[in-house]
Amino acid sequence: MPKVTELNTGTPSKDDVLLFDGTNGTKKFPFSDLALTLLKTANHSSAGFHNSIYRGVNLKTHWGLSTDSEVVNKVSTNISNGTFEDLFIGDYFDVTINTSLGGTETVTCVIAGFDVYLNCGWEAALTQHHAVIVPKNCFKTTSAMNSSNTTSGGYKGSAMYQNVLPIYASALQTALNNTIINHREILSKSMNANTPSGAYSAWNGASSDWEWTDSLIELMSEPEVYGCRVLSSSFYDVGIAKSQLPLFRLNPGMIQANRTGAGRQWYWLKSVAGSTSFCSVGSDGSASYYGASNSYGVRPRFLIG
Image 1 (tube, rainbow, N blue to C red):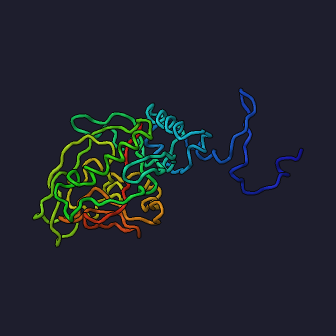
Image 2 (cartoon, one colour; image 1 turned 180 degrees about the vertical axis):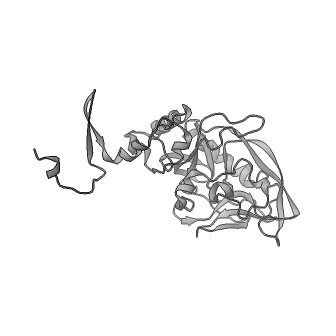
Image 3 (tube, one colour; image 1 turned 135 degrees about the vertical axis):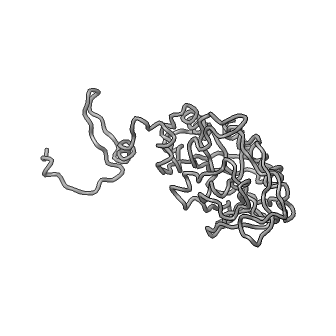
């Protein structure tokens, strides 16, 4: 056997292994897991630790599981017990949904953050451990926010909120083994057409009131995507959706999304931009807005645990 000093040098590959010897005998350890293991501290079960690392693996393959349902159950267990064990930002898994809007489609669920909304809420604060899930891509079908170019009624009064999102919420709840958390969010419910928009001084129309509401899934806010308000009309557009999701902070390329069979896709945000338009994420990567009657992508976020 050659001496250590006689061994060839080179760059290790992810498939190389290290040998460790201890009280339980000699064991091998994958080199690909070394950096993550060294990062772990006494607080490695905290949400803050897991929010700081982008990994982006397919959890079904990573865990060697056979069915999507098994993956969902393991993800839910590791979240609900507060350990977030072997879960990191960007990790993903697939579920299949069937709706009257898009028929049967596969939704790639990407972990976007851990305990992001913990302790948020007024009458009933959210105390349940959770992960924020954002679909990798928009759903198969597109939709308008309203049938006409109006933001009257704010986000909560929109046809998107009232007629489209509940259909997806029901389908996703079934596909995710009822692990979506029903919690309280503060949502805009009215728009004053005579109030100057915070987006631009020459625009009129701004969200003018809000209320606490039961929530399963919601469109994202501008701060959740970009980290700040850009074209939102007022603070009523934000509520508890006030912080950039770790997914977009660690990997900004995930802000843009595709749609099945359509390539890059504009998609809606829940923020009012003016009396006739809502905010959106542009297919070209821009922070944008469009008239409420335009049909664009649907990419909500939801909490599981």
